[in-house]
Image (cartoon, rainbow, N blue to C red; front, side):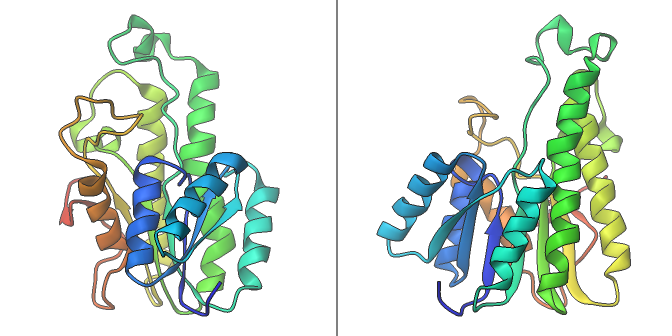
Length: 237
C-alpha cells in the first residue's frame, strides 16, 4: 500500500460499499475494503486492483470487537494517514415489509438485537477504535436510512428502523464531542437504491446512491458535521 491517505469502507464486497471503494480509489485514496466474508472480499478487492485502483482487503466482522481491534492494529502499521471511515455494513433483519410478522406487534426481540448490534453498535465501536487514528482531520460517514427518520416514522420493520434511528444518535453524539476538531461525522441516506437490500424496483442505480456517500466522505474543511443528508442535501432527523 502507498503512502496516500487511507479510507476504510465496511461491508464492501458488493453494492454501495463496493462502489464507494471504487469511487474513493478513483479520488486518489488508498482504500481498505472490508467484509466479514474473506473469499468475497478478496475477490472484490482484486477486481478493483485489476482496474488500476489502490484497494486492499482486510477481513472485518463489525459485531466483534476483537475483529475491529485487529483492523485498527493493521491501520497503525500503514504508511498513510487514516482520513475516511464509511460505516456501510448493515443488515435488514425484519421480515419483508408486506408480511404481517413485520409489524411492531410481532417484533422479534432477537431480530431487534441483531439489527442494533450490526447497524448501530458496530459503527459505534469502529468510531471509538478508528477516530483516534485520524489525528485532527477526518471524515466519518454513517450509512443511515429514511426509515430511521423520526420526522417520517411509519409502521413495520422495527428492527431496522430502531437501529438506524439509534445510528443517527451516534452521529450526533460523536459530532458534539468532535466539534473542536477537524473531524467531521455525518449520517447519509443514499436513497432507494437497486442493491440486494433495496431490490430491483428501486429507482436509483448503485452509482447514483454512492454519490452522496462520496460527497460526505470528501467534505471540505468548512463542510458540515453532525447532519443527516441525502444526495448532499440536508434532511430532517
